[in-house]
Amino acid sequence: MFPQKESTVVDQPASDVEQQTRTKQQPRYHVILWNDDDHSFEYVIKMLKSLFGHPQERGYELASQIDQNGRAVCLTTTMEHAELKRDQIHAFGGDKLIQQCKGSMSASIEPEC
Image (tube, rainbow, N blue to C red):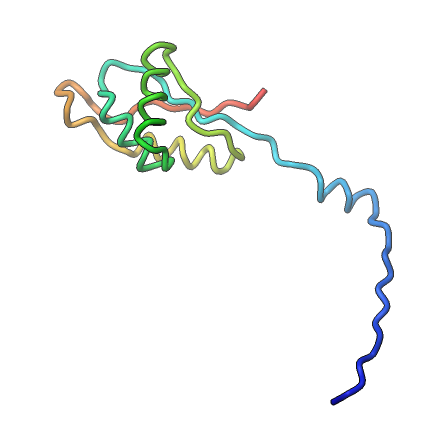
């Protein structure tokens, strides 16, 4: 066996720029799902499970919130991820249970306050 060498680690203070870069978080954004009369609770629950991984109970809570308040926050995340989720909502397709449904639900993103 080879003799082990002692290694010396010198702690050096990080520069101010490095410290700020490491601790600064990206701004967060809400993904908002908007109410309409063209989508059923079943559709909303299915979409939330498929796109966000929300269990059925959480999907029902959000669908109720949308119905009562006109909107609900589905996710709070980085801008890039929020934009992706908004686009996925817009591409999810129509509700086959509602005859007059013409397409996907409306969604938007807004900065977290």
